[in-house]
Image (tube, rainbow, N blue to C red; front, side, top):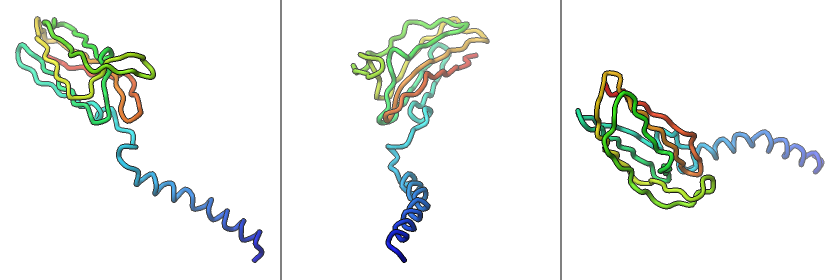
Length: 143
């Protein structure tokens, strides 16, 4: 076989096998390089008594929530006085000087004037492993 023909045959074979090599490489990539679903980056649970709603936000390693993107909207209920922790100062390439939460966060919300149609909506936004998630909404029916 002529050297030129051999080189062409090897090039074609390499191109044919490249997708399989790339597939194997991405399948064995470490978990830290994969996109984490927003529901895993920020796991939100709640506990409620007659007078208090406790929101627990577990934040996965490598993820963070923006403090100023965390908001509560109450419908058919009033919230008593509650406080959002200060968070950690952070220089963000998109939002500039920000404060973020990297550790689990607990919000204790006093509930006042509940009705059958009471609901609370939590809006939040954060990032994880080099990816910023779009703004998220979580609505809790409190009746």
